[in-house]
Length: 505
Image (cartoon, rainbow, N blue to C red; front, top):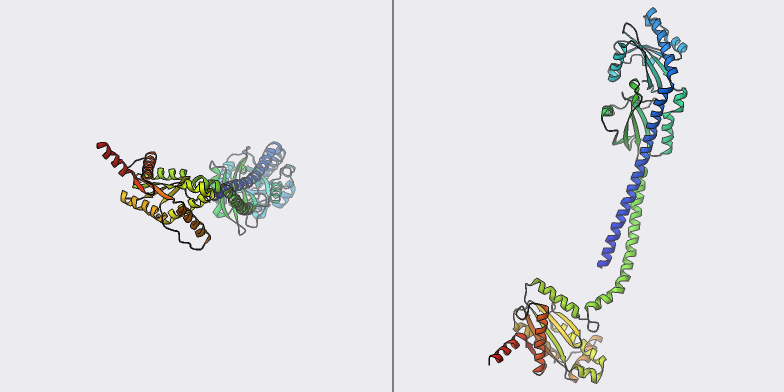
């Protein structure tokens, strides 16, 4: 039983370790894929910024020339109401915006942007515009967005000399060769198609506006999440939290991106990766189910093996502490029992050694098989006569030993010894079953050859405090009882007192 329990516990431990390892591998694999998505997005943004830093000088130069022409036009006619912005766009191939000293777009070839007040929506950008208004120089940014549509554009800025306005140009990058070579929007779609767990990938500028396209939910990061824009200034590079996306439980991962090429307002971005954990949870559930089946199957196998092993080793283990003939405990078990009682050193106990008188006559006259029947009979009679908690052992041959705990004095020990001697002198009552028949034969053998019992007894701690002393003194008492004529009991203490009396005479 203990072996089976140990095997099951060991299997459970190993199975749990294995399940935990597999679960950890699944989670790590999922996390690795998320990191790969992150790395791909960041890398394509970096490549795009670096490419524009190197190759977009020609675009910037055209924008500068166009801005200077518009500045000349302003110096000739500062009344923007008389400007034809639609015609200017067709002529220049770029959108034209006029930003006043309150950082509001008051005129534009892109009518949807007219009225945008940057001081209200985009505080950081508004401060940058104030600086550019007094710089008296041409500036241009990298990749940025059309605020109302999210479309990618490159913007340039040139203040008027009276510092009242900024002439802004917007160049559409949709068909730009550099952008199409490093198109992060295409990369996003490829990643969403490759990894089913990706729900959405979005990139926001540092004012929280979606870069690249118009979103059904709006082009700006939700109010409840704009607080993460402040996190862009913190040291941590990533941020994770759980939420819902289109009614589905997901994880939001925000990744901070700073361009190596600091070019205006548009080089700090927030990458938002929205992913579900359905696939990994499904695999974890399958892993758990596999663990249960594996554990149950292994436990069944372990129980079968333990049963077979137990059957193979049970008999040798039983015989190691039991007498094979009578079923009583053997000498090894007896010594272990006595030593265990001695270790407690709390209670008195009695020890009896018994020996069958004339047993050799039975073996010689009737044969060893009859002697075996007689030994079984004696063992059974002692079990019937003695208290249930008495420890009975056979040492081999016709020698028996008994340990009885909680004995108060020698008279009680004598009473038990004499009850055994008297019981073996009485006939066995046959109860008409196979066991009783066998024992009845033993009783007949015992009386036919005048077999009796001699016994010697000791008390702990009166007659010894260790196994060796107790056994020797009990054996001395047994030997003396036999020398007096057999079929009797002798207490070692009485024998010792008798010897002292004789010595005093």
